[in-house]
Image (cartoon, rainbow, N blue to C red; front, side, top):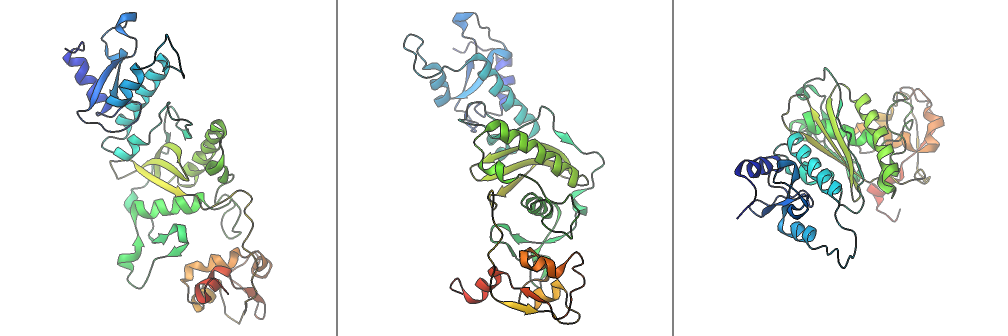
Amino acid sequence: MSSWSKKVSEDVLVACGRFCAICRKFKGVNIELHHIVPRADGGDNSFDNCIPLCFDCHADVESYNTSHPKGKKYTLGELKRTRDLLYWAIEEFPLDREAIESSPNVFSDKQFVWNPSEPLINANTKHIDKHPMDWKHDIENGRILGNANKSETMATGEVALTQHMIKYILTERGRYAIYPIDYGCESVAILFTTDDVNEFQRQAANLAESIMGYFAEWIQKLYAISRDEDVLVITFKVNGLPDTLVCRVPKLIEENTSRRPPVTKFYTIVEGDTLSKITHRHGKESSNWRDLYDVPENRPVIGNKPGYLEPGAKLIIPDNWLKDWFGNDE
């Protein structure tokens, strides 16, 4: 017979949403209530002394033998902390299973999580439906998916915002002279590679401030930044949607990455050329003009006024365009 009162049991199950406080998995009926301070040691049957655990995690917590210690026993502080983090996630991300399961858990081997005690907040954000449209992108392969049928290939609302966030995060600050000096981020690569949890949290806090500043019109609250293998996970909320959003940023940058290698194909600029026109002329979407600008040898030719190109000057064609045309052997 359970030692927990009906009220305490119901309060705990509502607070945890039937997720296990340790493994963060939804367990439905396969959940048990554990005394953080054992009754034999004076623990009571209160809400504060209770932690919801699945069968496997409960068995793991109970199995430690103090007479023959091996490994490290779960501490009372750890159990309370991870339980409180679960309750926080349930309250902040109701009905958002992905956000709950990826929420901070003090028992992971290493927690690459930046999770402030209070979310970062921007006041007076615009409704997400007003966010500018953008061509749908295949981010990992660097391709724009747009075609003549804009109704099917334009990203709107939260999809457009999430795409913009990914491009902003993966852009090295100062990379494009035509953008404002504060466009893009610094030291993002280290968030994908560091094994130092404290360093991750420092850099994630910097990234969070940068995101909130640049997207001040759109991001209402920013809750957490974490790393899931080779993906950064940004958890945030916007004006106009009841649920939180998750932006997953793939690892597409490396520390000390060199610029793309020079190639031997050239284009001679003619009167009236612009980067967009040249890009379109080479069979690419006009918005891919940044590929031309990104070739280091083209920077002196383009200068700080990309709207005017000197006729007769030569631009190097990006190597990824050549691969698209001729294959990898070119």
